[in-house]
Image (cartoon, rainbow, N blue to C red; front, side):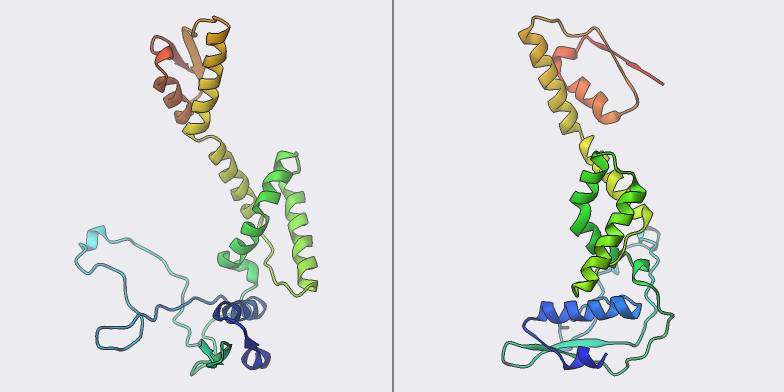
Length: 222
């Protein structure tokens, strides 16, 4: 931690990144506190909750925060340089965890490798091999002094599932259907009298949106 406090950074963002890199290796996650100025000039946490909201309509949320007294401050030196300063306490009130336990750290890795995950999945690579590839990449980058967090198997599955969902939006169905019907018109093929689909709502809506299929009966395949 001594190096964290002795290094000088060229920007506030670089200083914050150094704090996050330290947190990853130490076993905890950092959050940026809201330091908006109050009407009386004080700076501190400002709640965004509406006090007029009825209790029955308030969201029920669960937080992993433990009111830990540990603090780090990023401050400018006055010559376009920034340094990290410890708060009043550098002690934790919780057990430390591996970086993979924090979704914020894994999200950084996901954003960096999302396209690669989708490309490997599209080429037929199973999720386990994708996970091993990402793990190897994380180890390789660590040797190059870039700290990334490995992914959990569910992270790989979530990226693939979201990709599939994005591919099945109404706009995609409508484009495919419009292209098919245009080709049928060019070949003088009449619109089908019957269509059969599963319970894919986006596809059913696309069929119902084209007037050329107004007389077509859609059958639901179970």
